Image 1 (cartoon, rainbow, N blue to C red):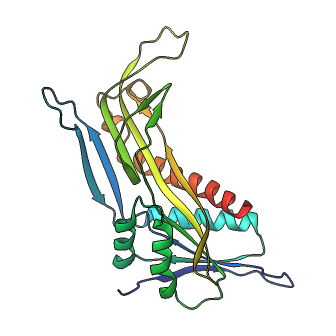
Image 2: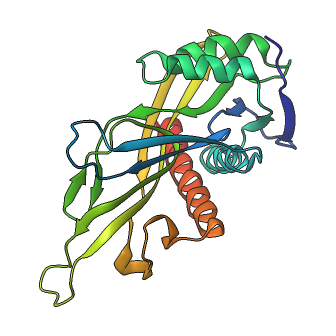
Image 3: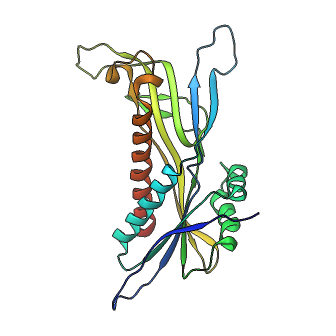
Length: 248
């Protein structure tokens, strides 16, 4: 398998400051979105969830993850150097897809990635990868059984009825659009190639008809709003995960 990694940026500590660590950073989450839509089926025991994988050519989501890692590292360890790697290696994406949902997914990806990293002075590697979980989404005071979700995407359910706030005279609303980010952030010691810490992230927002005035959940946000909200979700959650990794 041929690597197509490209160094995007390198921040170097200058002067008399001692650099204890150099972090290489790679993200594998932004190649596509998962759209899961629930459709009511009458007279059938089959699942009404329809899953659609949507390829994303623009590296906006991976770039957001990389910059969030960079910011979190520099905030936690100002003397550290950071090397960001971009590019989509089909071989790495295949390893990620095959190991998705398994306990050793981060290590499997690290095993494939580490030997193919360009020569740098990096002592550690931070990888942002897709995670999978059947954990139900929380909406108001209820939970929604979405089935397995992974990576980045949206869960759409026009049948959900949400309750108004307690004590409110407003009526409940129907329909849910939930952008989600199910990812894993792992720290690898490049001296050994082993994952030494990782933080899974299962994050989502919830939008209902009453918040937007839309007749359908999917139309409750424009394409630009969907991109903006999902980008913010990724950036915020990766930042927190890296802070937890380095804090530990």
